[in-house]
Image (cartoon, rainbow over all chains, first blue to last red; front, side):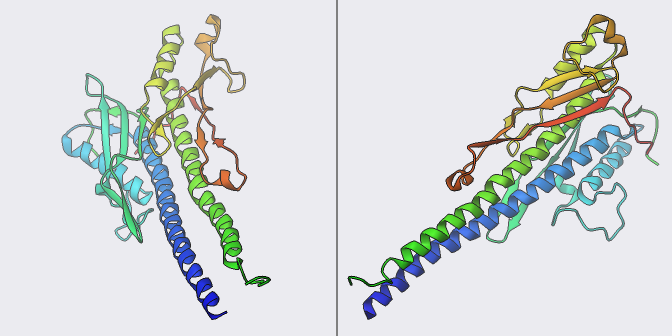
Length: 151
Length: 153
């Protein structure tokens, strides 16, 4: 009787270990998928904003300021965020967002590509790194202003 | 040994727990991918419809440029790994009657492009074990006008 009780304990211990591992893995994947979904949304919104925004290209700093507004929209949901704004996704920073313009021969934008670069999702047990994904391209439909500066 | 009602209890309890666990893993893993695909497909069709509408200029060349622009869009699905296949591009003058191949006399009145991505089959891995389907299709559709929204900022 006694030894059988011990058997049951050991069986339970072994199978509980397996289950806890499964549950931990499930949490990790679930959380990572959740964050990835948020990233797809954020990058999509940023690319759409970029596609409709006026492209001011009087000088390189103007283009960079425009790109910064696009990165802010991806990260904070706002092109001009308040100084204490919290990112939409935990730990996402504007540096993690890459804005790449596809230009025509004459320098006018034809499309804009927004992607996540070097962002890792800390899912408690293990971190997943996203580099170049998610990536979204929108055709440029905004106004091209080669002689204007960013306000 | 014989007749002990406790024998095999752990086995039965564990099989029941395993079944529930598979269902939970399936919900997280499979439905997680389904939701991501839904988002990816929606972003793709949004961008593709804008790309198609941008090319419409009342000429047959505009139509073929619109289709080419949709096919050339590099957006992917399934965590950014798969191309969109079977994408349908329709055109309309009134946002109600859609045609993939508009007649020549309609060309100048076309104002809208609609892109449908109907074939995004997400393979189900874990939910199948508890009676789920083998795959779930997550279609998406978007309409864009030839007069795009422009932000003044």
